[in-house]
Length: 456
Image 1: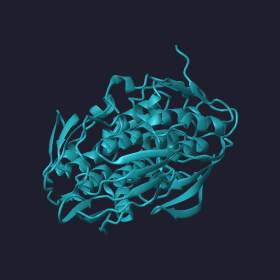
Image 2: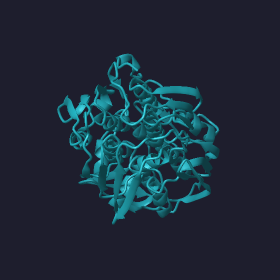
Image 3: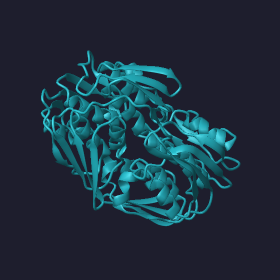
Image 4: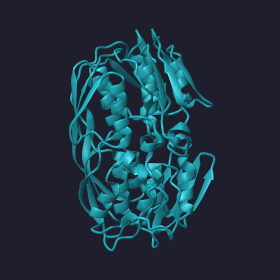
């Protein structure tokens, strides 16, 4: 994919209103974004042909597919969600002929920095305006210790030139923050290093990278230490192609599930949702709020637990979320805050510093979303307080999304519950992670509850 401005979608304002009845039905959501990115990357590093089913075909993941092609892997789409990747083996990626444009995807950009750091090649990464504003220094610093060199804009921002290490050295690294992206970047670079790379994380973060490394045949050891973990990876393994079934993304499932909790008379099931325990903090939290939420059909697919989640609308109460839970629900706080605005009492979300470096400053953007629609919110340091009054706020606001798909979807979910419709200035970025979001909500509502916003 080129990096011309033609690829930037034009703004698409949307609005949502309270449907006349409840949301109902059984639905599947798009494949897990985190697993989809990694499936393509590990397929590119494996020897043989990796078959992937259920791949998320949102813009972010398609950027990763294009980048793997540019780095020498053969990547073919056989049908909806069905892909084949013929890999080049660990250390076998080739120098790309052009700039790698990662669009809106921070995950792809940071993980690919890890891939590049272990290969003796030169590459340049760029992205859209949102991604070019996000910090990459958090991955550049540990990856430089492998022997890679980075040249970027102030603060380590894209565009970023990467010179991978000719002979990467194994690393012993303690994460300064709970970040699965940084951990994964270090492990990806460690694949190419002779010896054992060791990563210490203070709080356990999503472990899809470790699971997939094992799935492809790498030697990975994980030791639990308090709330954190120590991961050891033996470098220069031969990864062997292995089939991957991508489960439904729990971060995407969060939006229709919370919508059904907030719209009276709703009962809705999302099928085949990934239930990795390091990703299910939202479901734990919703139950603490009194949500009617049950899980059935639990099973293991491709090394990951999956199941079907059913929710029923009902009254919610305030919740106090500890910092230790943040990594397991880091992407779900905006929609959780929308639920908290409709609950009884003051909810407190603690230790949200990591949300400030997402697609937007999600702490500030979430607070602004709620305030624009009549909710009372306060921020103290990295803690967010949402003052619920036992029912939805008034609504009627226009939400600035800051090119952040999760802020856009959270605002539209809130608008399904508020007396007045809620509008967003731009929903074009929703397709990066959840193609068909509005269509799914409208199908569940039996009417056009989410529609294009008429010009004012």
